[in-house]
Amino acid sequence: MFLEIIEASYLSEYRIALTFNNGVSATVDLKDKLNGEVFAPLNDLSQFQLFTVKYNTIEWSNGADMAPEYLYELSLENS
Image 1 (cartoon, one colour):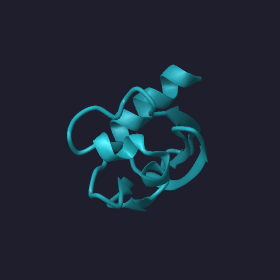
Image 2: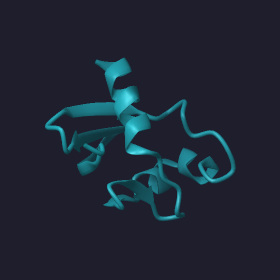
Image 3: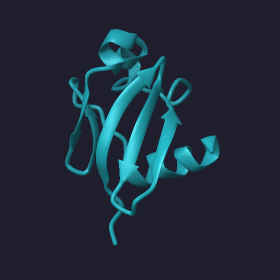
């Protein structure tokens, strides 16, 4: 089974609640994960909050996204 994000909601700061297609619900904190040119605008919280679930992961309004497998691994670190 391919891992997919089916639901995502903003919590606070750089934390997002995610629900994966394997039934796991978890929280990721992306504060220290927004590195590189495409993620730089997301250091502004007003921009960070502008994400949607698209193509089975979260995508921001500037086109930045993260693989669902990466987000799943991060969520395991936070639990």
